[in-house]
Length: 302
Image 1 (spheres, rainbow, N blue to C red):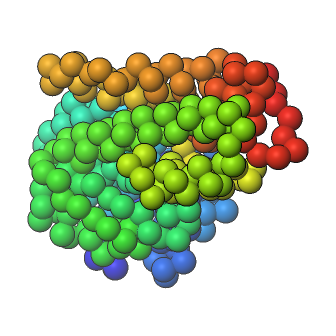
Image 2 (cartoon, one colour):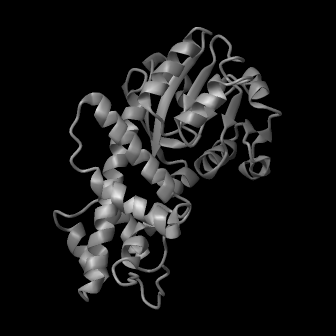
């Protein structure tokens, strides 16, 4: 697959990092983003349009905000579907609604093109280092055919089932991430208000039953004032939780635990942290808990 031409649509926060990994590995990328200024920094060559990128690429990677944008890029006028060709593979790295994903998969199949939904996990640091985890839905043989491309930026690839399964798995994973981040933010503010040593508190959690991704990887940095900027924003985290609740409704699932992250990240958005990394949810909770910050010499902003 290394000889195949790679196109990349959506070179923002995560897409830009992934593009850099591909270029750093020695492969050329033809890129398109509505903000043309970001393309050069990713190492990609600029495509004139989505249509020209689709026509010129054998593998098209998408990294877009949500299903609405994915549908506009793929199904809209002069989009990917209109310019798709037989044998082409489109890999959607976005976090999207599985129902929309399955619809796009079917439409692209009428043109002889394949569509993989490949949820990503690992955050900005993993994207920078090419160590992302992928959860992929679609045809297994199609995944096998583009594995060498995915290996440029992912260290773990899981085939999880038919079309839509990748995005379903991503929503389940992101919901757990949202719950653990919101809950850990709350208890860390409580620990601060109780006068506990936060580094010791985290050590306790990480050796006890409260351990989770946030206690292991996020809060050891946050308590020093490093919010690990560059990852998922509060707006995008909220979007993912809402997508999970929609999925739960479609599955007939009673979702008893969605209210916590919905309230937490909704609060963060309301208090002005919408476009800040989701780790700042701890500051939003701190704001309404008396102006609390976890790290020394910090001033609360409300």
